[in-house]
Image 1 (cartoon, rainbow, N blue to C red):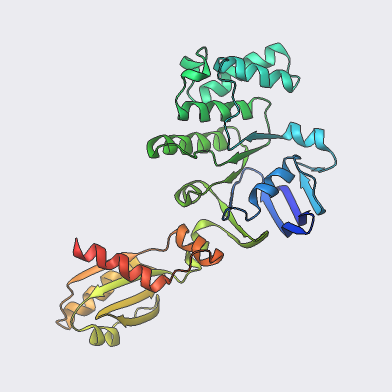
Image 2 (tube, rainbow, N blue to C red):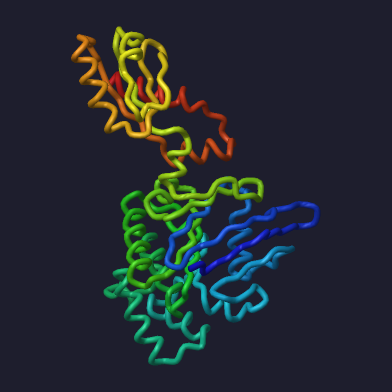
Length: 323
C-alpha cells in the first residue's frame, strides 16, 4: 500500500524549473532513497513533501492527505534536517520535551515517549546531559529520536550521517534499520554516500536536472549496467575466449591481453571457466571479479562525471593484480 503518491510534481522559481513533472510512489514501511548531484532537485522535493515549500503544479498524497491539508501531514511526518537543529544548552530530555510540547502532546505521553525513543537510540544514560557535551553521532541519534517523538508514519532523513566518521556512520545505519523494523515507519532518505543508500534502501530514485532518471532496487540498478565483470590474465586469452560458452555470459572480449567477460553471475561462471582452462592446459595467472557498485550506477545515469565503465574496471583490476 502506497503511503506517498507523487504525480507530475513541478516546482518553478521564476523561469527556473527545479522539479519537472516528477512521479513516484513510496510503499508503507519502505526505506526509499533519493540520490542526485547537488542542485538536482531532491531537497526541493523533500521540502514540498514536508510542506515547507509550495508546489507549482502536480498532485501529492501523503498518508491519505493532500498538500493543502498541511496540519494533518505535519502530524504524519518527522524530519531530521541536514544542518544541526538541537538546542545545545538544553539536555537531551529537554530537547525531546520541547518537541513534544510543540506537537501538543500531553505530559504523560511526552514522558513515556521520551523513554521509548531514548531507548531506541541508546541514549538513556546521556539523556540528562547538556547536548553540547554530546559527540556528533550522539547528536544525530538524538535528532532521530526527536523526529520520532510524535509517532510519525513517515520520517525524512536529510543526509543523516554527513560529517560522521565511518564507525559512527555504520552505527547510525543500525539505528535506522532498527526503527524501520520496530516502529514500522516509512523512511525517505537523501544521501551522497552511495554505500549508505545501498545498505539501507529498498528502492532508490536517482534525480538529475529536476527529473527522476532511474528508479528501482539497488540490486536491479546495479544489474542495469550489464552485470559482473570477470577478468582473466592469461597468455592464451583468444583460445580461452573461443572455448568458454557459459550460459550466463553476455559478452567476452580481449582487453590488453586479458579475457574480459561480462556475465549475469560471476561467482557461478568462474569455476566453469577454470575447469575449461584446466582441461585444455591453459594457464591462468590471475582471476578477478568486479561487481557494479551504486557509485557506478550514479555516474552512469547522471553523466556528471564521464567515466568509461570498461576502462575503470580494467584499471581497478590492474591495481589488484599488482598487489
